[in-house]
Image (cartoon, rainbow, N blue to C red; front, side, top):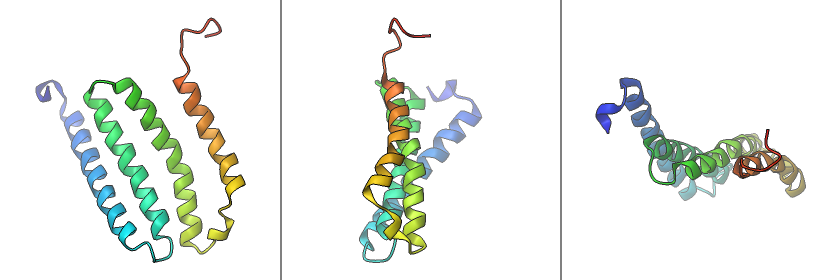
Amino acid sequence: MWGQLSTFAVFYLVATTVGAVVASGLAVVAYRRRDQPAAAEFALLNVTVAGWCGTAVLARLGVPGADYIWHVNNVFVFSLIYVWFAFVLAYTGRSAWIRRWPLLVLWSIPGAVVLTALYPRHSRYSW
């Protein structure tokens, strides 16, 4: 299989795998120091990045269920926007701005996008 991949594809897979491992390690360190300001949000940010990188590698390798893994990858990608936003607010001392309803409204947007990606394409109303 590796012989069929271009040099760039191998570089992409190795770099993305290293990114997943580094982000996982940073998440563990941040979780252990969760008593520090914004550490929990930083841990969540790194878990999201590790999930994004990990699912991208698995899907690119074409493991069984790769189509489903791409949908999971979309969840991580869309979640990253809001997790980054929560981290920035916590890091700058504005964690009081993080409230349940505004975040729920914000999360509904990527949630709707992910749900449309999961919707079967063979509907009679498809374009």
